[in-house]
Image (cartoon, rainbow, N blue to C red; front, side, top):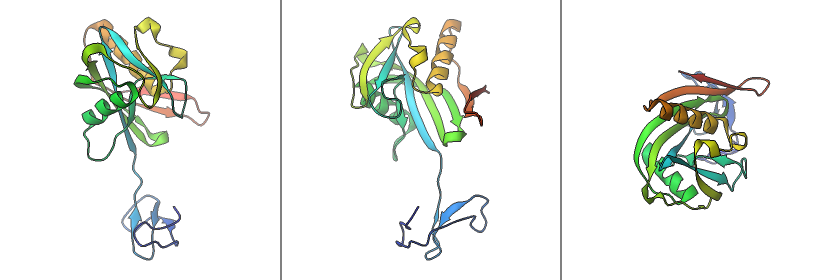
Length: 188
């Protein structure tokens, strides 16, 4: 941070403000404290006739890999609205019956993922502005070695495990990278 967005000062300090316990960007001129908080990512395991809607990414990071439709929540929308919006933006698919499915903390990148299980209305989907292609896939069709992010792999595994048992549960956990950049998944 180079300038205070409140008063325009360039004298920004990185310090622990009085009464706080974390380093923050602070403006000594006007006293503004700038808080950086985790980002919420939300999306859907969108299903149509026992198949899952998958999208091939057209944007970085991980262009050309497969993912579930998901993205950052915007201000002034609910989690469900964000998940439905992201599914429409990435796959032009309209959803219904959104049910909370998984919540995963990714503290190493300051994100929280909230994934829903949803139905695709009319089974219609096509490439949106952020996708190269979309496809409804059976479990055997999922390109497991070409998925975009560990959270997508974990969410799909949980979905197919639940489907085999005939009952869907709410899943929670944490996905972290250790100092050697290896993925560590903890289910709660």
